[in-house]
Image (cartoon, rainbow, N blue to C red):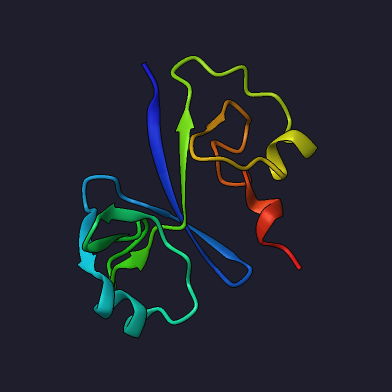
Amino acid sequence: MANIKYFSDQGADTVALQGRGMFGMPNAEFAARFPGVKGIRYDGFSMRVAYPIAGGGDPLPVTRMIEYKAFPSRHECDARCMTARGKVMRCECSCGGKNHGKGMFTR
């Protein structure tokens, strides 16, 4: 069984989000609140947002969903992890999915 981990990439920072605190924000409100952010759909009318694990505050957009394996090998992150892309990203690195697919967002 795998766990799904959710992350929000805000500039250079990556914030881990609570899966239980996730909800859908209407598309128009999402676009006004997070201009230029490509989030992940909740359904046809809304985008996924969630609260940060560390501390409270306002909800943040979900930009990456990582399927973290139940029994990971916990190997060191490498180019396969950092530049991973696709609809379902699977990870078993020592970073716990924090760096997985992160290379796509660098300039």
